[in-house]
Image (cartoon, rainbow, N blue to C red; front, side):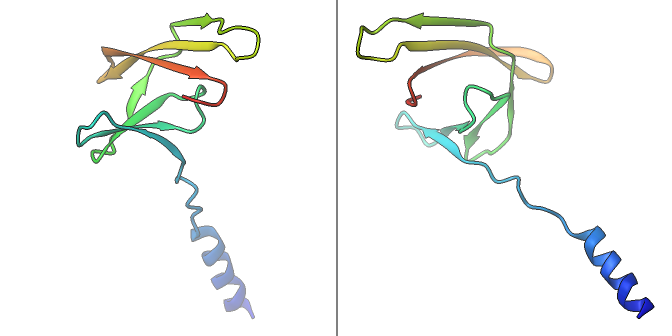
Length: 102
């Protein structure tokens, strides 16, 4: 019985939860690399490019612009963030969303 509890303890302590899989929005402009934006947008801190799958860190939002689209439409929201590679600003991204569309 003692061995059973020891094996159970080892089994429980060694199991890993594989919840690292996320959903992504995929954007392509006809090139072979695809921009992957986590579906938690706008609450994101990194993006990736397929097929490289290396996380590219993003700064917090630098600027938010809203464009009113009229009475019956949701506004367009533009968010500007910086790309950070090796602790250096390497570029800038500007995301546009309207309602649930990114």
